[in-house]
Length: 294
Image 1 (cartoon, rainbow, N blue to C red):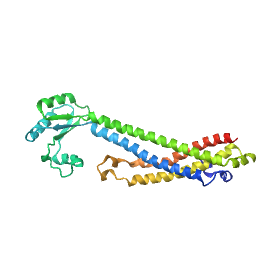
Image 2: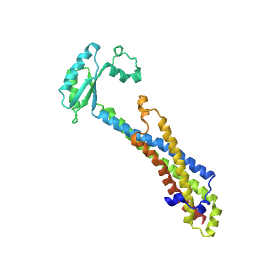
Image 3: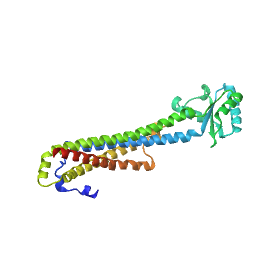
Image 4: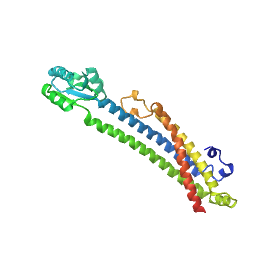
């Protein structure tokens, strides 16, 4: 790696410092790095979302008391007494009007009057580690509290968690495709540069330069270009991430997209990975093109 950074001033003359290939390599590396930062942020955010949904909903259930207004309080108390004697229920409590209003505020507004709408009373149920028999609890509620409906979250929790995991997998797949795309573009740029300098390469061969010597010059120049372009793209991507609203600034799930904690160190690996991709792609392109020019 030190030899790659130091280079050979004589061999460097083979590779043009400016021109179409230089601009293409810088632009491709910067663009791909910028997209990679966003893709990594999406993948990590999806993982956090899946973990949060799994942890928060795995041991929680909800009972809705759907009853006339004059019977709602009595049925709520009956349901709470029933839950106190239910095996596997760690705790249960009825949500207050303020809590239910806060839950409905994103959809119905903050000035919602619960008394004016047939909003059911909600009971939050926390399961014990060994869980409870949902079927048996439903039968008891049906017999003793006719207006109670149990929702143990399993019907919609699993699809949400599965969707978040799939989104994370798609994010990592997109990162791989970005790396392959950058490798293809760097390969095209290196091939064009080698073809454009065919006469210079022929002269170098006449004076004794080996193909390894010539290829090393191209590999070094294109690797450093990719490293510099990726560093610019990564910096812009991280700045864009910092500009996104924080999760506490709004109630939307989208505000959770970004890096948290030590995850901010992950994008710093993007320039290094871009340089490795450029190193491999340019080396393969140089060896193949030099054989064609032989």
